[in-house]
Length: 144
Image (cartoon, rainbow, N blue to C red; front, side):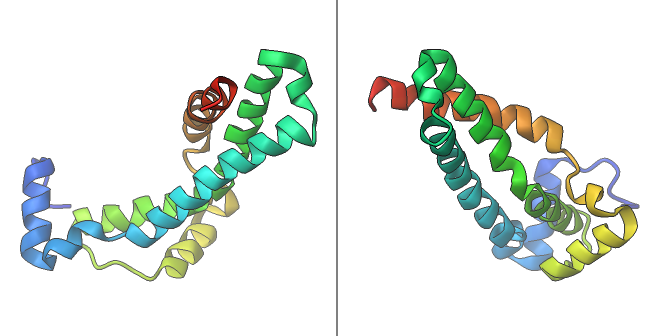
């Protein structure tokens, strides 16, 4: 945004607080909460399905890790929610008015098609896999 080329995190926060008040820092909170809740539920759910229904637990540690990989990959179905959250927060940080959730969805779909809604899917998937293995599978194996 013109005039804000040298902004840093502090100056952006100050500007948002001045223009929109403290709640301005939380634009995109609804999509973020929805994505986080569905993300962890999906990780645990898909991991358990792989462990039990696909009977991966019979393969020992490798089966458990495999079930965590499936759980991590499966949990990224909600990437469009994250894409929209990022766009909302980008607009706020650049001093633009935000749009309703579905307007962002329609705009991205119109401009870039459905693949545009899955922008950043690969790094999210890699992160989801290691987090699922270490925060869902390992504690389960340790009986925690």
